[in-house]
Amino acid sequence: MSWNACNGWVRQGHRWVSVAFTLTVIANFVGLAINKGQQGPAWLTYAPLLPLALLLLSGLYLFVLPYLVKRRS
Image (cartoon, rainbow, N blue to C red; front, top):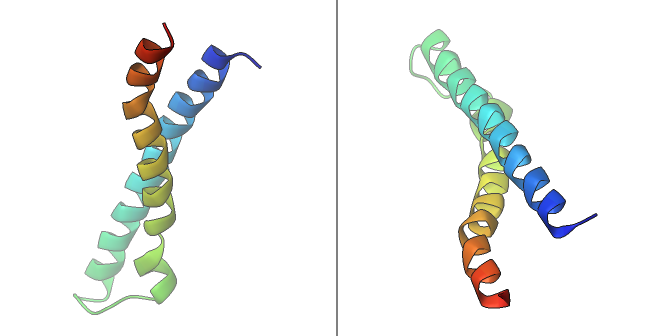
């Protein structure tokens, strides 16, 4: 797999994980609305954390990528 193909996979994965993160946050707000502001189930409360961590890692990689390319050339 070439370097550019790997970057494309990371960029596309970052987009899809952002969709998953948005959906989990929306589900969290819906859960709060249904429970009238009370704390919902723990799995619903903490569900956005995994996509958020993946977004952090892939976002940092995509942020550093232009500097790595510039340094290699």
